[in-house]
Image (cartoon, rainbow, N blue to C red):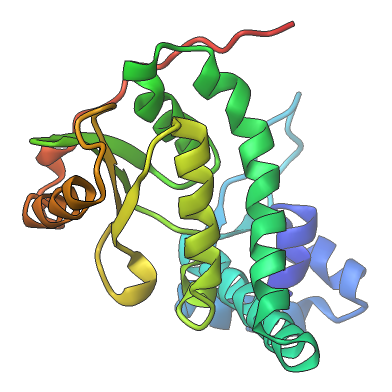
Length: 240
């Protein structure tokens, strides 16, 4: 029943009964259970034109908690598929899949990132990530910027398959034209996925890059302090 509402949108008990070939009484009992569990909530329907007599039937909509149930189900399916791929073709096949997936993101993000000066590219990438649901921001650090993702749609799957995080980091490096370093991930239990983006030319030697990594880790943003992240200014995208 919740899946029917997810697929078709807010629905009344009568509509659900007809759609699922159930009695209205049976549907109402199930709806009451889902409302009690917090998966659904009843709302007054929007008025379109003149109402007839009597109160209009309430419509039932999914709550955020109800949607999370489906997201977890999709995560389980994705993890199962990657597990099968790994068993059938080896871990290299999972890595290839992860790189193929992130290459699609790279292709979409590149025009927006390359449309701005080098100094603004981390913010442009954060904006693009936020539009895809990653809730990204940029924080200034002593040795550059730290790109922070406060949400990760694939975090549950990445716990078992870190190749997803590794491929994403590779894309960030190519888009920003710098050697970046992943400092923390939600998949590993951190509150925020944090990627250090050094200042261009700040470190050019292997020894310098190692020192940069140590300093970046020392200055990682506190996970509980959202004020440490500066909001980015929306950057107009160039359209053809």
